[in-house]
Length: 254
Image (tube, rainbow, N blue to C red):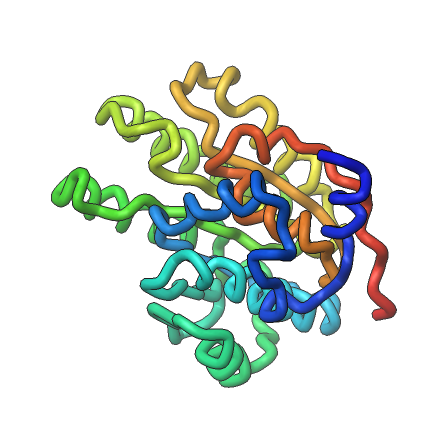
């Protein structure tokens, strides 16, 4: 990518204002693949227990990513929260997403009361069941997991879920881009970032999997460049974006 194009994409415009002209032609072509996917967000609302501003960041990132995804996934996005009882299904507009997010309270339950691995297993397992029954008629899935710090033991359980699903996809001979999982850690608390990076870099070789379906990113604020928002959406399903090195985002004044 040319330097001037990269600088253009570093602007902090709201995604709702990002028209197709915001992106160069190659990025626009890459984003069009999202029309083949149903985008599902799994958001760790327990980050608010550690840092209230991180909860605000998580909602802001979810809203911004959903705004871009809905330009291509016309079925609308799904948003699920680990500690939330309600699920936002087929949210098709920025207003739909904002109204759903505003109904959610700031959660005060302890980390131990909900499990990231269980939430992820429920979502991936439900999709695998649908895929087994519907085959090619079932739309591909792109799961965006937005989380705070998590402990090593719990991420060990997450690893088991990812490996199990990848092996099922391999055995079923599904396309390598049938399913993607993006982990975005939005706070630097805990030791989980190195583990998430390991999922991204080594999971395939470690277990001799036939696919690389995981990407991981970390930033401790919500004001992300347009380019990083694109990478969060495309990293798990496009190998060129998975390996792309981006310039750092400028921190927001939290």
